[in-house]
Length: 219
Image 1 (cartoon, rainbow, N blue to C red):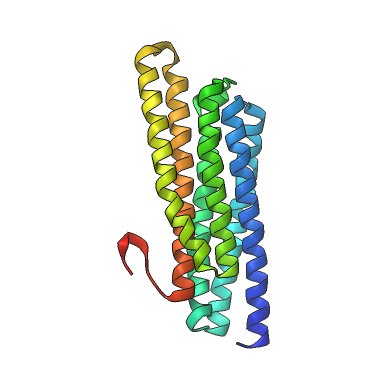
Image 2 (tube, helix red, strand yellow; image 1 turned 60 degrees about the vertical axis):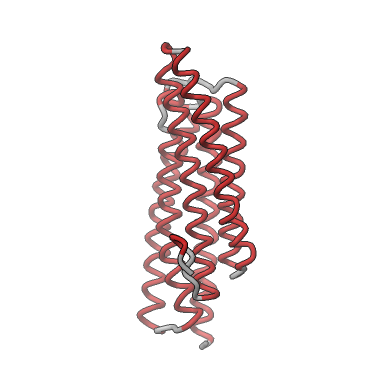
């Protein structure tokens, strides 16, 4: 690897770290929005998403520039491919944060009941841990950490399905709260999708390091 290529890759890693930090912060803010019905925080989520979109484009352009100028091979090439895919996953997580903040109950200033809120927070905390771990795994090229993210995805899925069953049960007994309950269910689904995108990043890390495709049961 040339010194110039190493410099460019280090710059790219810093950009990825900045982008991932912004995405994680906005996701956390979006969850707080739905938990407390904080419309002001929701406005901030939407503003921050514009910054995330701009940075995602910058990172993608940096990846393409390195590919064009240096024509990397082997691990470096796989890392750049993973980085390109990772930016797409991060951008989608940014969009999901906006979806969470845009829920009917959040816009109406309706906080979640304590019991439901605690369960949603639990799902969000698990998804956020997966996201952070997947990003750290890619930066460190650590496949052991990446594989632990894959294992955690089933846990988040199970938590979401239990939450959804509770919402469906409450819908039958609380028709007047239908709009709020549905918006909280949609927020939970968006959080579950964040975990899916974290899993994608972890899978791409495994590909970057080992050249092994683990998506769809391959590899």
